[in-house]
Image 1 (cartoon, rainbow, N blue to C red):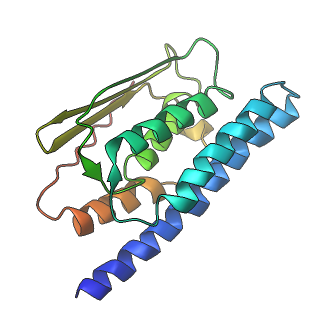
Image 2 (image 1 turned 180 degrees about the vertical axis):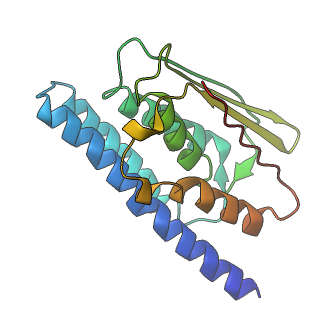
Length: 185
């Protein structure tokens, strides 16, 4: 049974890396088309993120601070392609001793950027908050919502969040709560 769970986790991890890489290449593509100077910084940021994804994801647990660094790097990377007047905030108060399963939060953050800063939303924002109390991690993310019809091809929707749900069930069975609230704006 343990081997089966490990196999499922390995499969789900394998989905994350290509999904993340595909989204990241779209960022570089949009910068290259617009011939923006930020492309060199974006390539370096992506390199740091991929280093993390390739080397640190292979462990079962990592210090939460490493995930925080990944999130900061990802936010900096994403700022290269999003509207300048978007409001992006990231606050965190974490216990440095806490360890978490790697790459569990990033797909949710990716999703928030995808739906929060695209699709013609007004007053665009992404707010990310991570707090730790004892051994309990509270992760909240909120984003504006644009028009889904302006998003990418619908057949590629839902991989990230569904993957997170499955991984939470395998890694933290009956020890987690995931609540997604989808409102008009």
